[in-house]
Each structure stands twice: as structure tokens, then as C-alpha cells.
Image (cartoon, rainbow, N blue to C red; front, side):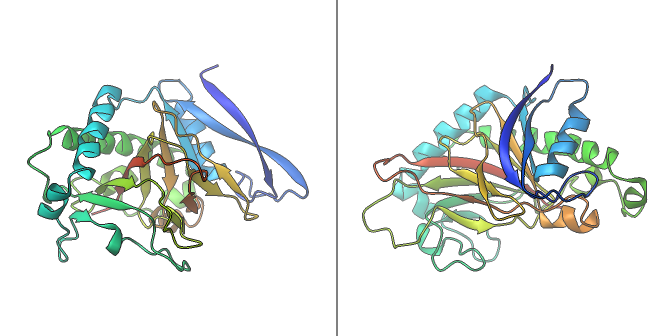
Length: 281
């Protein structure tokens, strides 16, 4: 066997390959796909189709590089002078975004409890850091092109024929593909009631590729409104569907609603994560 199965309870899950509906309690197999396996393409596409996300192992992105990039940004978010130097450019929307101007998810009452840095292909990058983040950006983008080819290969013919161009080509040299480095600070005593690290939302892009975060917290929502943990093992890459992929596949692949929940009350650890948002040109 080249992939592992984790059984998670879902209720009337709607996104099966045959679009059938299940009544009562059912079990959905959430795949942890071995990228190097002969059947990886089919298993990855099936996981996205059934659950809205897939988790890759033995992927080609250098794990040592990922660890070094995390170390770089841990230093960055601990340095107030650096953060001030690279404050957000309101026009280009690159640079550092402090908690005071963090995002507010649609329908949420509070800003997300996070700060982050935006890296675009032609955007600003801190000269005090190594170039390793840019190399990781490149490797993740190459992986994403392969994943989009896998997804397209398993589309029904009548949907694939409607695409204006191959999915993988849509992101080639895109100036909008964004690497976001997110820092969720330790939870303090002054957190507003109801505020969370990242409120429930969907992504607007084609795909999101997320290297293993430093701690858990990411959850995905099923068709009945139940929430389930997404694996965030250090050596994994979690991939979820965005609104644009749902749009251009006529809903065959469904955009995933997800969130990042707060840690337990006695947990004062910070959290770092690094999603790459794949945008078409």
C-alpha cells in the first residue's frame, strides 16, 4: 500500500464521485497520499473530490528548506524594527500586515488573531532574511503545477473540454500567486470573546498548498456543518480547493470552508503557517 487511510465520521457527505447522498452516519476515508506512488494522481484527485482537501507525503519540496524558512520568519516576527521597516504597501498589498489590520472573515465579528507577511513574485522581500523563502516559493509553485495537471486528468471529459486552457498553464508566471507567512501569537488574556485565530472562510484562488504548520489548529467543514481536524504533520503538505477551481470546473470540485481554532486555555504557544495561494494570470 502506498497511501494511508484515516477514518473520520462525516454525516450525509455530499461530495462523492457519483454525487450520491447518504442518510444517517457514514464513514469517509481521508487520504494521506504518497506523492511517489503509482496511483497518487487518482488518489489525490479522489480525496479533493470527496473531502475538498488532500494531504501529501513524500512530496518533492525540500523539508530541510521548509524548516529553515520557518526559522527565518520566527526571527522576523520577533523583531519589531524589521516589521516596521516592511510595513504593508496599501497599493501593492505586499509586506507586513500587523494584527491591527488583520482580515475579518465574511460573517465574522472580530479580526483574525494573526499577523502576516505577503510575498509576491515582484514584491518586497526582507533583505535581512535569507533567500530560502523564495526558493520554497519556487518549489511549491512547481508542485502546484503538477497537482493541477493531476486534477485536470481526472475531470469528466465534458468539463475538461470547457477549460480555456490547461489548469497548470493558468498559473504559469502569474504575478498574483501569493506566499503568505502567518504568525498566530500566543493567546493573551485580552482576547475578545468569540475571536479566533482564523474564522471560517473559503479561499478565492485555484488551489492552496500549505506546508505542515508548527502546531495543529486547522479544521475543515463538512456538508452538514461539522468540523474535522486536518493533519498538519511536519512532513506533509495539505492542499485545498478554492473558489476559482470550483468555478472553472462547474462545481465538480467544491471550494473548502476551513478555519484555525484557538489552542487550549493553558496553551501559550505561537503558531506559524505558510500557505501558497495559487492564482491564475
